[in-house]
Length: 167
Image (cartoon, rainbow, N blue to C red; front, top):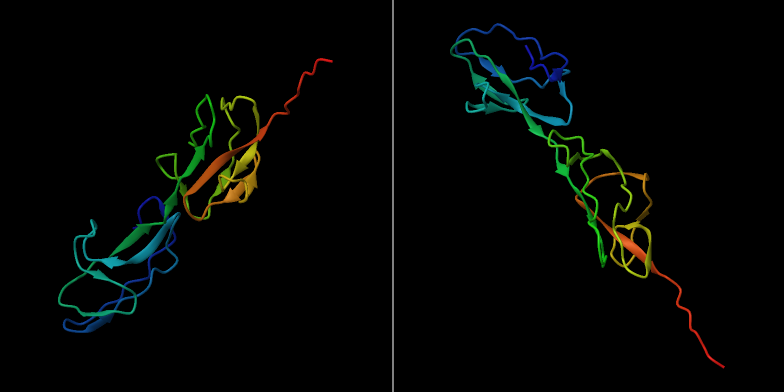
């Protein structure tokens, strides 16, 4: 029986004579969201012998094979104030991995607003993947697909300066 967070069915087992060669099957239609199937193991905790699909072994007794799963890559989004004079960059806790602050590869990230960031005499423009503003720009509530760790830098526009002249 697959674990409760796994969907689908393992391939059907077969009956073999002692000393026969068994060719290990693939995962069937088993699916575990955000995990990749990595083979079969003779122990439910993964401490036994691991077999990948297509490998063979000689059967000497009844053998149960347990699915082995590797968690897909997870990534973080970091917000950088990029010269802010007060306030704290927002902390992203909208992730979809169990800890809540990381995202699985291919997940959709919704960009946060600037929160309480301030740069004296400057106006917040947007977030950018490069500190100089020459990367990908994002406004609050924009979305993107995450494929690696991402730092979003606050981009600031200097407020106009005016001169008082006496005549």
